[in-house]
Each structure stands twice: as C-alpha cells, then as structure tokens.
Length: 106
Length: 232
Image (cartoon, rainbow over all chains, first blue to last red; front, side, top):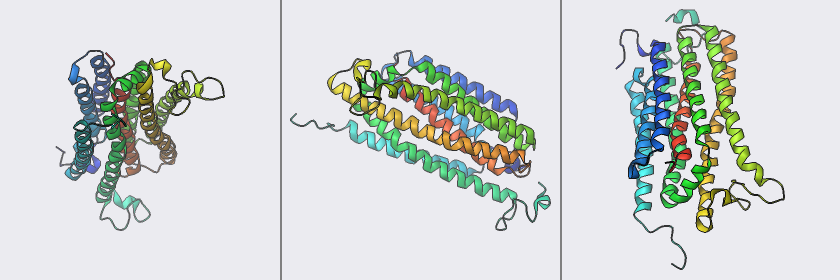
C-alpha cells in the first residue's frame, strides 16, 4: 500500500497520477449523464450511484491520499461509511415495507 | 525532514515527538471531523432516499426541470478545483511556495465560478416568488410555490415541494461548505505567500485539501441524485 522508505508523512504523489484521476473523474461524469439517458429500469439508481462511488473512491484514495495514509484512516473512513449505510438502509427498509404515508380517511 | 530548523519556535508542538507524529494526529483528527460530516449530510441523503421512494413522479418532474447541462458543467468545474487543490498540496510537499499560492488562487477561482453558477440557478427559481404579483415559476417551497411549470397538479404538485426543499437544503448545505472553504483557502494562500509552509511542514494546506475534496465528493453524489432522476 504505502512506500515504507520515505514514510507516509512525506509521500509525494506524482502529478501524472493526479491528472489521471482528474481525467477518470471527467469520464465518470460523462458516463453518469450518458447512463441517465438510457432506461435500465430498476438498475437506474444503482448504476448512477455505482459510478458516483467509483468517482468518490478515486478522490479518497488519490486526492485525499488515503492510499498513502495509515490504515487507521481507512478504518475511520469505512466506519463512517458503515454508519451512513446503517442510517440509509434501515430507514429505507422501514419505509418501503410499510403503508406510508398514512392518508387520513383511507 | 529538518526539525532542527523549526525548533524551538517552529510548527512542532511540544507534546509531539516529531513532525511525522504531529501530522499523523492532524490527519486522524481531520478524518474524524469528515466522518461527522458524512453523517451530517447523511441525514439529508436518508431523507432524500425515503421521499424519492414515496414521491418518485414528483421527484422526477422536479429533476427534469433542472438543467442537467448546467449541473454537468458545474460538476466539471468542481472536479477541476479538486485537481488544483491536489496540485497545491503537491506543490507544498515539494516546497514550491509560488506554486502553492498559484494553485490555491486557481482553486478559489474555480470554487467561486461554481458558486456563481449556483447563484444563477437559485435566482431563476426564487425570483418569481418575490413581489406581490402572481408567482408563476416560483420553485421555492411555501405558499407561493407554483408547480404549473412542472406540469403537476394536486398531490404531485404538493410533493414536488419536498423535492425542492431537499434541492435547496442539500445544495445549500454544500454551497455553505464552499462559502466557508473559500476564505480559508484565501488565508492559506496569504500564509503560503508569507512563506509559512515548506516541504517539511505544510499540514494546514493538506487538511484544507481534505475538506475541499470532501465537499467535491458530496457534489459527485448530489449531481446524479438531484439533476438526473428519471432523465431518460
């Protein structure tokens, strides 16, 4: 993962990597719009979110240097994402499995 | 790493063994803050998920009303600002002071361009709500909200207000983060100009970089969720 010789505190990421990530993010944005133009039925949202997750991962790993940071940073980030997943998935599981909103008189 | 050059009035606080340890602590602290930010925005994303599920047609109509071209262009602008921010950190790591200032100023410029476009987008939706006359085209949730532009009636018209509440709430909170970030970038540029940062110590540039990239990530999710619902 990280290069041990110089230590993470002084790790310098080559400019090429940044430019590559930037281009990948641009391509991802074009893909997002392109994918939204087609109807994949139930897969529309998972595809849009999937592309966004890949883009976010690139930003996190390279722009935010998580790839070159201590493992503890990755652990903290993933714990945050896990709690976000708990929040969204458990809330949604409740709403999609109940008749809601309750309309008065119906 | 020449810690001696900084001691005793240098950036190394006395309770850290060396700059590496100090930086690692700063990185962890910053990430802890960003984790709270994930959950701060997370509440809005969860709300969005629920109401998009319940009011899909209204969300789709509201989303169609936004210009995906503007959102797309603004996404590219924000991604470019992330690149210039990363380049500022890179320049700092190499100890190139002039380039830190240059890239920070470019980041401010691109961030401001993004906010300028947002201002235009908001204005379009809010201007019809002002004044006493008819509020045709007003998309600010409330009494003057007008769903005729969305071709919606009845319940769906009411539900579209939830979409626009979330639109203004989520993009507004995102924009607020940028409005807070830009002056901080300006301060960093000033300090970099004064020669505060070098290859051995430039932690503030890196920490603000983390914040800026986080704000970029939030937008990466907001763009498809707000601008491209039922787009096909």
